[in-house]
Length: 293
Length: 346
Image 1 (cartoon, helix red, strand yellow):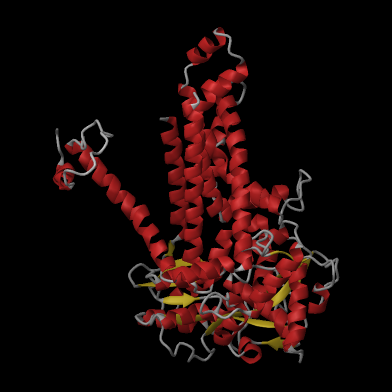
Image 2: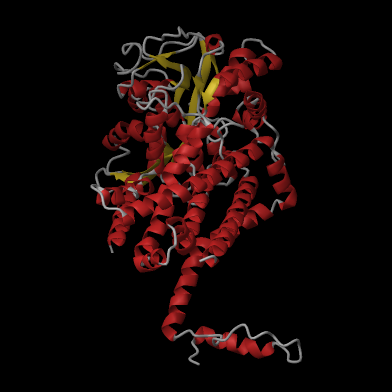
């Protein structure tokens, strides 16, 4: 076994488990540590970078929220206005994520499998909602769906506006995760299935969907997480009316404006938890679908 | 590969935008640098003031490092260690936050203008020609008038507008019950509460609403930018006072600049951007965008002030806008927002 620096410490730790206990099932057939020196360095860099950018700030948020104790969480969530904002945000985010799962997969399919004029252009434009500063996105949406809408759609300052803005900024996620997987998918398997008499629907259900499921789930998780935290594109379009179109990020900002960082952190960590639950749920669904293949 | 290039382009565009946010207005080059940390509207208004200061004896060779953004965000950034010699905010509470942290001296208000550098008044922005005939506070709470005002929860400066409505009743001898009823009517007529004053202006000029509660300087600026709007100064309204101060370790030049901000010369520059002078004896040239450029700042019949009508921001901030979370009182306006929101939902 080639053991790197990091490996050495875990190797020492191993004999510590006393013998005589119920024999562990031999779950691990590979050696415990396969890190080469190069890989060890890579892991080290990854962990330092990840800690600096994610783990430490995240712990700080949770620590700030925790300093108020459970009663702080209760009082934040018991506030009717905040609760309405949580319901609106999570509800609209789930809705938009479902829409993205369907539409995003369809767009990815069209981009990969079909040939049509302007395909390359569309492929590039998909990323625009991503690159556009969100406040600009809000402005564009307001002029398109506001009172002077050239399309005759007056959605500004309604719940629809929230869904619209979220759908706009999260569009690329599912498309971009599904696209490369679909490109790699061999047509041979589908042809073989077809030659054995499988209908088109069976092929989609048994072959295509299971292979796409992990990518769809990853894209859906990204788009949900982005949706519940969105602020910039919403503030102009939604109108931020309490109980009607006010989202969680506006509530958080209100707490901060009042110098109430504990409540802001408590609400933020609640949303983190919601995101975690949805991401885990998506992963479970994804595993089920993939296994059916 | 193609993706990497696209990502790189997106990243570099974002980088350029981020860099554009912080800029240095360069002067002579040899002297020192003053960091000015101020609220967004000041970005354009400060340019001529910087130039005039650099042309004065005190400001010879001085350079300015500027940072602009939402007043509360700016103040919190300074608490977190952002560099600032002169701070200029929309609300007094944003300066008192710095006093609490020991970053600004306790006696910052001991100046000829009580620490105030710029001022304006709350006005009604209406559609061109004022089709709804809106002149007074009572006109805007009529049924069917759609109001836009920035969100007093998330935007500190939006609090001026709501307090102006409150002062219309309380200042004229009305009871707290009357004032609550009036603000409730106003909130019921409100169709949108955008995040900041500028966003509210954008939503209004885009075609939403019949009346926008805003500041005189914001209305003048919008008209200077050819927005299709008019504005009405109501017979009684609230004086908006924007405080400025130096931080405790500011240089002599920074202190000189703070003093210069309230000089007649600088106040004349600010007037061109729509701010009412805070000192006497300012020679104001025609202000483009004002209702009457020759008389840009008509005297308001009854001008309420935060100190006289509301006993100062220290008291008003909690009494009207507290969020009601543990340890904080539930502010009257916060409470009214909650009740009107729930009623509106049904």
